[in-house]
Image (cartoon, rainbow, N blue to C red; front, side):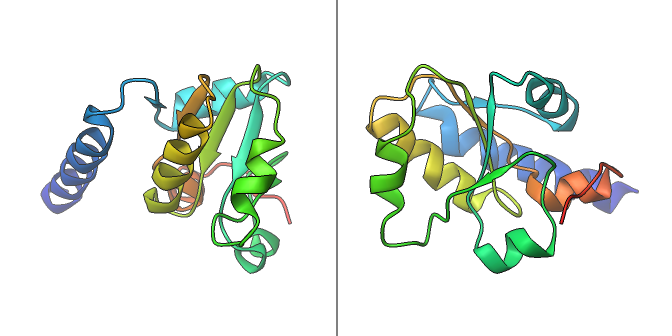
Amino acid sequence: MLKTRQTVSVFLFCAALAFAADPTTKVVGIDEFDKLRQNKENITLDVRSEKEFKAGHVPGATLIEIAAPDFDEKIAKLDKSKTYLVHCAAGVRSAKACKKLEALGFTNVVNFPAGVQGWKKAGKPIEK
């Protein structure tokens, strides 16, 4: 149990550091992410690969691969007035995607660093 707490503490500390210089990104945990995604006005954005997405994703998520060469073009076409709930597998790619969204002027960006891995561990539903 202690090792799990230490791992979670280190993860949260790293997530906090990643966003310390960027106050516009909101970082949320599982419960708040789940609550926010229930609002159909918000867009759940999965930035993993298509293969990962097809293997299982958060219900209702939209895929835009951060590794795709046209990622910047695709996100530039998104509605900036919407709230985007961004996730990947475990937080690294979603943090990068959030920074890119903000660089393009998006102001309602939410990072879910636990990602699909944390979602599954919490026993939340997966869609294929």
